[in-house]
Image (cartoon, rainbow, N blue to C red):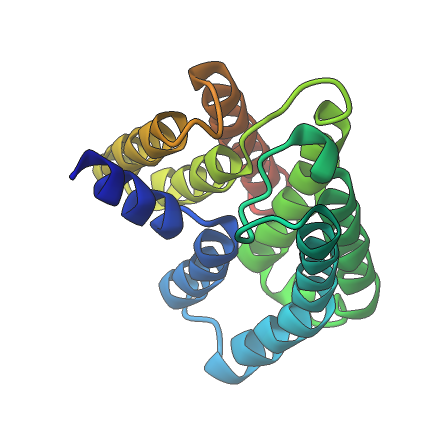
Length: 194
């Protein structure tokens, strides 16, 4: 029973899902026009998503992995690099309207820097990108509502537990990822929104 919950929580905390939900959360709270948000999400999916999925599939096929959960530190380089390059391309070609949406700008900047930092940390030590994405989401929730932020931090810990329980990460790796995500989100909001 515990392993079933660990798998479900780990899937809920998938960074692709969490970061996508963060876009929608910020857009909804800020009342950004749906057309612009959907167009931006389409660009993100086409550029970043395709590069990430292609690199993860390459690793999965090359290493004959049973699923897309890339556990070994050595196998994570290519997906981190592909994600960073994808966000960098997105940053360069999509910002024409990004300054009109400072909180969305903060999300993109946070994720791009987070992917870069996690990739660099990964050269020597494994860090949890699930923890990063949950910590990032928590910082944005805190910006809007303190109590909801505390609830989301609790959810971050629960999803961190699922990663430790599955044997994918240690508590230190989950904590480091969560702290990095929360800090980058907080700093991006302060820098770009005030």
